Image (cartoon, rainbow, N blue to C red; front, side):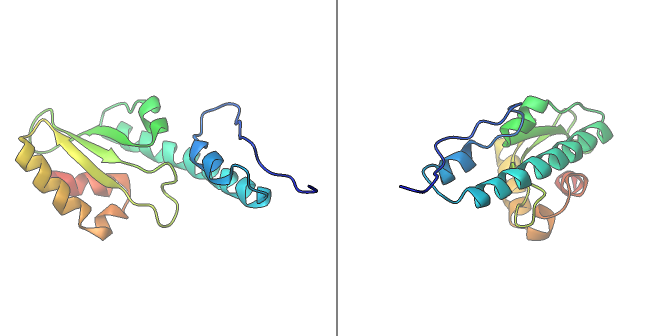
Length: 142
């Protein structure tokens, strides 16, 4: 009684995922915190998509916006190494906010053991995981 609590979040247009924030704050009276986080998500998400799209264009490929919105596995063609190989990156929905890092999910078009070894090496390198997309992809190609 006397308190306002959050029952659901609806964002229109629904081009920025906020379901995780809605779940976190459901039933909460911390509306100011929720609004701050939603605003941060919107801002970082638009920067994120711009950076991801630029990286795809630099590599001569088109990134599917639907894949970027999902916030998970985003394929990029590799320019060196095995022809037709693609790096499938994990890009958190809050990236490039501080504390978020890129990751390598797999490398398609190469043997599984090669993909696994490259993923292990990349994901263990904090400096690379905290870099931008072009530097990250260049490191995969090495």
